[in-house]
Amino acid sequence: MSYNMTNVLGILFANTHDGAVPELAAKRTIASIPFGGRFRMVDFLLSGMSNSGMSKVGIITRSNYQSLLDHIGSARPWDLARTDGGLTLLAPFGRNNDSGLFKGKLDALSSCLSYIRHTGCEYVVLSDCDLVINPDFTHLLDVHIEAGADITAVCHTDTYSEDETRDASCFKVGPSGRVEAVSVNRAMAGKRTMDLNIYVMKTSLLISLVEDLVSLGKFSFSVDVLQGKCAELNIHAYEFSGFYRRICDLESYYHANMALLDPENLSKLILRERPVYTKDRADAPAKYGFDSSVTNSMVANGCVIEGVVENSILFRGVKVEKEAMVKNSILMQDTVVGSGAKVENIVTDKNVVIGDGISVVSAESCPLYIAKDRVVK
Image (cartoon, rainbow, N blue to C red):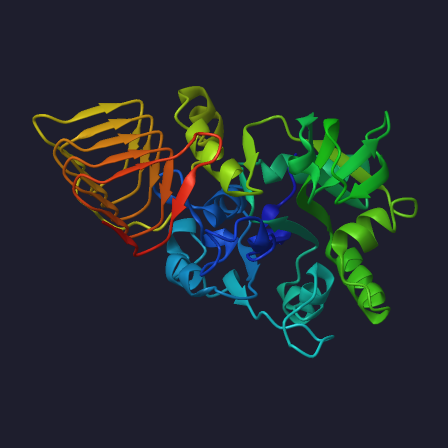
């Protein structure tokens, strides 16, 4: 029998890993980066928590969080607009440095301990927002309880490049599933068990760890908890086998989006029993001109297509004018591609305008990013 998930608190870190994609996170959190034609990164974890029955979720911010506030609103799309619990946006202030902003996850959690205690939840799930993933949190907690673990960490075993492991933690896992050793931020290519930065533990343990370690001037969850207390705590590895992508740079963001053009990947990410919710903009259906052609692409509501679109993802309100060509590209909300223009292997932010007859082409291995509100003439 599954545990009552209303007694589980979710904590999301909105700004962790902002530096991985400075182009996209210059004026927004990584949690609010647009993804997949109509979503934001935070939608996937937030929807997973809502689908599991978790009714109390806190999002810890740090900077550039206006777009996140605009997107979350009342949290009604995720059924978290509640007078008792629901979604809470937590202040970006730490207690242990002159700037006021927190240094690491432990410092951030330290400033939120009163909120964590006030929820009265027995368990807590912590997660970053750099993942495109749709986990079953109910099963995760059941496995955690059955294993008798202190902390259960979601991970995935695969062959990774040095770039993929450079800013990540990797586990050495014993035959019983216990984590025996943790390496942090070491660039190691090859088969590795990578930490996906999703953890479940008892709330009382989290509070104890935060109070003890912050008092000693320690702020890193990966270094000071996972690595530092690996021998002391029973840290259990939960192998995630579903579809996921980790956003660690612009190239990984580009390829993660493009992966959704494969229907098999899309069906593994957005499940009938675990849908992904987002803010609704209430656009009209997409319109296609008589001479338009769209092949293997995702086209959101509100788009107007009069040219050719191939292997691309178009967010809401994108316009592709007559004789324009869009290929292998990601065009965010309200981008306009002018008549006769050519766009290939490009990522545009919101409200970009590509002028008539302009050709903007990049290599697939190195997609070009065009910043928000830019006009290319």
